[in-house]
Image (cartoon, rainbow, N blue to C red):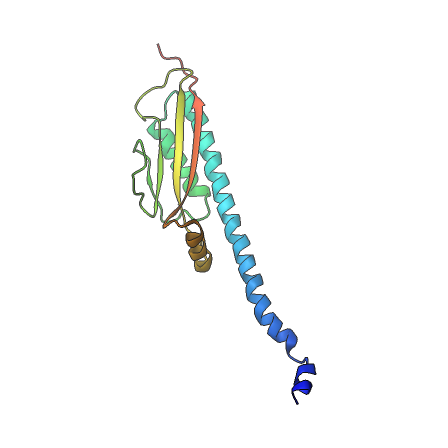
Length: 161
């Protein structure tokens, strides 16, 4: 009787698919999540560099440039809805808020002499959309809150007499 059951292969494909389909689904979700992450990181780096060049042509990293950077990040990133923006602090806080994007760098009211560097930095919170990937990522990197960080330094082009 056992030998007869051992030779019976009906249902084997179904049992194997019970193991493979969830793994393929997780792989697909992982690829989608990493694509969102790479897209957001590319957007944040692009606009950080662009606004650093913009600040260098003006000679200072003023409020207008900071607000423009915040608007571009809000408009172009994939999951920025509901985030608040802190664009006026010179440095990020020691404990960043969970849904706040920090834009900081060279003092906003100080003109920068030609040849001196203007620094622009963005500290962006990242949340995976799928809870299993989010939990796995937090466990893997052992961080409570994941954040994307971008920095750009460009020499000022304005001569101040």
